[in-house]
Structure formats: C-alpha cells, structure tokens
Image (tube, rainbow, N blue to C red; front, side, top):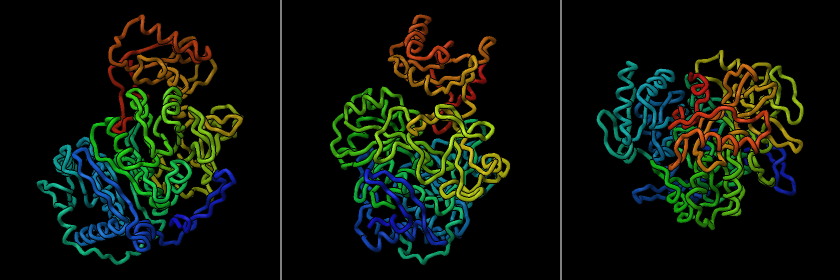
Length: 544
C-alpha cells in the first residue's frame, strides 16, 4: 500500500475521477520521518531517485539510501549548530545532494529556502537579508560561491557555508563531511504547523515575496502527483524543473514519493529537446511534466517515439492550442494543463478521468473549494471573467495554502481579505465547469466596453509561423479606452517590416472577434522577464 493512503481519505467515482479528498495526519507529521524513513524501513530497496547528468554520470538511489544520506547530512548540520527553526538556503541546481539536504532539513525542523543559481549578487543580498539565513549550501558551478561571498559582504552578514562536490574557498565541502557522519539520527520533535519551506516568488510586479509553507504542505501534493501528473507506484516521474523553483516541490519529491513513484532527475544547464527525450526513453519514464516552452521546442524539432510514456502534463504558462494538437497527433497523449501558485498547491487541472481540452486549465481540485468572483466579491455568471479565489475550510486557514508572507502582514491581510484567499488571477468558467485562464487580474484589457484576457489573443498569435514569443497588453487609446497591442519576438529568418506586421494582424484578426483585434504591433529582440522566465507585462506597459 502506498504510504499516502495513511494520510488522506479519498472518494473516487467509477471513472477514476477524484470527487473529494481530505487530509488526516498527526500533529507531529514530518515528511522526513513519516514518509521517507517509513518507506525505507518497510521497503528499503524501493527506488526513490534516478539521476544522470550531461557528462554521462548516473546514480540510482533507494529510499534506504535517501534515509542514510539525509541522516548523515542532518548530523553534519546539527554539529554546526543548525536546528529547529533555523533558515538554510539551498542553491543546488539539479544535483542529487538537494534531495539529501531537503530531507535532512525537514528532519531537523529547519526551514529550507530553495534558490536558483541564476540569481545575481543583488538578488542574493535581498533574499539573505530578508530571510536572515543561518547557513547556505550551494553548488560550485556558475560562480555561485563567489556570488554568495559577495552578497554576504554587501549585506554585512555571516553564515555557515557549505558546498557540494568540488571544494570552494571559504566553504566546507558537505559531500566530504557527510561521509564521516553517523548514518543514524534520532527523531527531532517537530509540529505539522511548524514552518518547513520558504520560497520567494518571482516578483512579476514588485520585490519577490517570501512564501512560507508548513510541514503538512507535502501532503497537499498527493492530488498533484496522483490525479494530475498520474505518477504511479513503482513508476518513474520526470518533471523538468530546477530545485530553486517551487515547481520542484510539485514534481520532484513530495507527492511522487508519497504515492510510491521514483523521481527522474536530469542535471543539465542548456535545454536540448533530443537529450530530454533520450532520457525519457533510456530510463523508461512513465509520466512527464514540463512548461509549454519545452513542448513548443519538441513540436518544432520533431518528437521521437516515447513508448514508456503514459501521461504528460504542463503548467507555468498557457499552452498554445497548436502545440496541444501536434503533441497529441504525434504521441497519442493529451497534454493536461494545470494551474496553481507558489502560495498554493495545484488548484485546477485536467485531472485523471477527464478528457483534456486544449487551452483549458481544467476543473477545480476537489482538495479546495474554489470559486470565481467579481471585483466586489460577488459570484459571477457562467462565461463571465472574474478572480479565482479559495474559500477556506476555516477562516484564514486552508491546508495546502501558505501560512504567511515573510515579514509582510499587510500583503498577507490583503490576499486573505473578506475571509477568502485571492489569487489575483483572472478566469471564467464555461457551461461544463471548466476554467479558462485570462492572466493576472491586473492584466485584463478593457477595450471598447469589453474585457479581453491577453492569453486568448496570445494563443492565436503563437499560431503564426514567424512568432517565437509574444505578450499582449492594453495601451491607452482615446477611442476605446485601451487598444490591444502585441509585443513580438520573431523567429530566425524573419525581419521586422510593415508588411509582416500587416500579415500578422490579418492572420490573427480573422480568427478573433472584432473587439479582440490587435491594433498595434511592436517587434522586439527579447522580452523583459523575471529570473524564473515569466514575462513582465508591467515593464512592457510602462514603456513609452
């Protein structure tokens, strides 16, 4: 029996559709002890992690291995004075040491702060000062140790420093230290309500916000893994995400291990479609999750046979219908979109038992009570755009939703106003109960008395062969209030011209209702983006 069954009650219909799920767990639930160690004790050889890198190195770790190595790391951390409530930053890319360190910190009751190696020195300064880290564990790649030293100096702070793999000046080698540490670790008493992980949002509209999740958070990802990604007990799930992002929590550890699936990790820097599909076929990946960008490349470069792959999912941005159709034609698999936030787990998705519909973010997760409401908090009609909100089980408290923003009670109160959690995301529900995403609520374009979601126009734009990337915004217009403007990055071989602008407008506008017509086009060489790769529409709107 998969360990997850001990921590939830499910109601599933004859089609395999999840109708209701509620969590049940002891007040001292801890993923490290109650999931990882429990599986290791009962089935020590059960596969947990399959890892390889571009250099050809590969390792397969059992749950017994994860227990052993996490215990060794926990002892190293403990001997250095890291304990309950201490904040530790992990900058480990896709190195396998991340999984040992994450579980070790959970066991200690320390707060893990994942961060990407792509951050600049100033980015690190902001996060280090905001979180008051006590220790940092990092890769030696991409000049990360040098950036950390510079950031600490600028912040006028100190922290215990570890690196993994190779040595680095000013850092203790954690990989070496753990080899000499005891592989047994006595349980530290923690509470399910203790802080477990601190993620920083990507900051599309301002400074990144620190998002705190408690120790029950991994259990909320049971739905993510089992009913959306359709990872399987004894299967192999592959999510393309670096460990510095919250997507790693969605697809590279918690829900997958809870349902008994191993996690596939490919340690790479530069994305190459053929390498990803080669990994899928070489190791027999059964379920796969990647952002739409990956699928766009796969469709353009050609998708090889992937006979072991049973299910494919996508999230992070909207998927163009053309990519959905071509992937399905080539593989026979429907791409199942999902939606959620760093502050939450999976909120809506094309779930198991439902046919995926291209462009739809699916139906609400049975784990949450989700509604679409208007600006005044009123329910909206079918087909009317509103804000996605979560109505909690208890006022201001909902399992799977972050417990607080770091040192930002004003923002915390704002998103929890009126007793519900406000996502700030706009969507509408169709007559079949499916949700359709329309971007951030602030991104809705109001033109000629109509409200237009940028994604519905962007999806059409992406069908034009010249368009590699695009973003649609509203700009001031004396006649309409706002006019629809498309900012476009062109593909290789295409040159900006008035003729191409007219061609793109004609191509798109004949597929769009007149009030959604593109009135202006600007060609750019690159988009302003957050460190996580999200296009900053606020920057585009601010350009003169």
